[in-house]
Length: 83
Image (cartoon, one colour):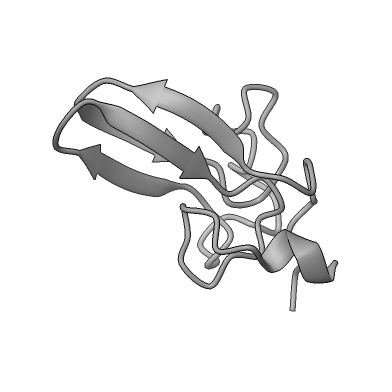
């Protein structure tokens, strides 16, 4: 099974406006935590570590997973503490 690249062992805390975002689940994006389609044509395409479309319904602070191992992707659940 393919494992994601760990970008950082902490969440990306960001103030987000309501809208649609695409979270990077593979860790290859140069625009992490957001997908830049770098996974296309790689072993990550079509896996659970590919991109994830996210709807943010109101302006708020979001903790995006940076380690790519959250059990609640795309949001941080503290999994980075065990890596």
